[in-house]
Length: 72
Image (cartoon, rainbow, N blue to C red; front, side, top):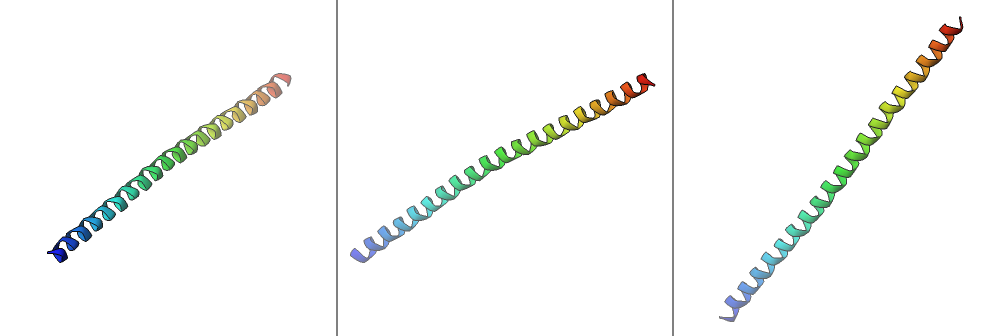
């Protein structure tokens, strides 16, 4: 009987260990997902800033062109 009981305890310990490993993996995956979401926001923000800088540059170039045309 003690062998059977020991086997059950060992099996339960393995199940708990596997469960803990799965929990840890799920936590890591959740952290990775949060990190990816933050990175995506940073990329989108950088792209928006780049577009805004490009628009501002084009406006300045056009204003320079207009002032040159008006001076002629």
